[in-house]
Length: 324
Ligand code: F6P
Image 1 (tube, rainbow, N blue to C red):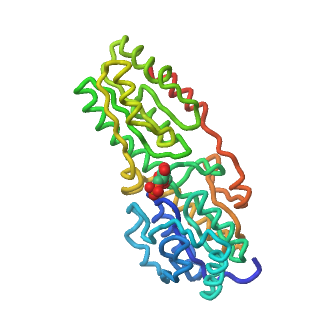
Image 2: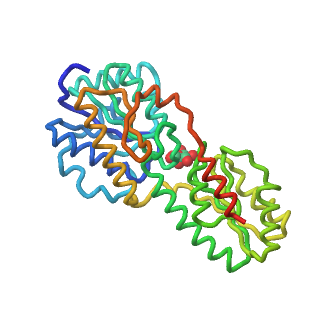
Image 3: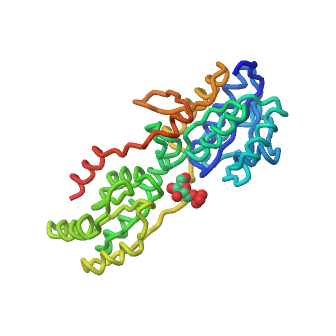
């Protein structure tokens, strides 16, 4: 990128995540501090196709750091995912004088950022998704809040499971990634945790375990299932059939995507938003901001997209050892 950076745009794309607002706020304020004009793009990449953009000022992002959702709204855009859509979006950026875009979202959003960079508009991606499923980053904005929401819900479910000597099977979000299930499962003392990264054997991993722990005096049970494993209702029925313990299924769903972001999400989002603007203002685009070994770093977008996620085997083994 050789031209001087005059204006940038910021958008949120894909599923929302608590902390996205804190990232938008950091992008807007860091840019304005450098005398860079900022446009907020509404409804993800769609806003670059429909012209739904607003010029931001320091006060546009007041009173949002503690709010869940995204003030810019988000969407998944069919039209943008075509070469003609990408060209239209890039042309629109040029017409506004925008020569840098910050994209807050997951893998799909980063593919969009890579394409827009390819069409001549340098982009920087920030990982924002509750699933923690971005390979290049050990943390994604929203993960901590989602886990704490799930934990609060499971704690409530545990109260009623305890009162009734029941087994509660709770499904948490995570289509391809079991991180929410793993950490929530450990934190709520689940008897079994099922994640998509590991082969699932209900008889061995759940039924046998419940029967064995029941023999040690335990009378109520929590089983945490990641969305990617699915069949939560059937799992609950099967447990009841095989163990004779009354079982109930609860699918937590989108409650995990909302709510006020935790301190960790607000801080990581602020640092990542700031870093994204530092990159663009130094003439660096086509990058993804990430957290590695607790530090904010950045990587080439294509390299980041090609990385394979590593499941935390050590934590999984700890979970298996303590859930008896
Ligand atoms: O944000 C990630 C995620 O929550 C996944 O765990 C889930 O499968 C997906 O989004 C559902 O998103 P939506 O209901 O918005 O399509």
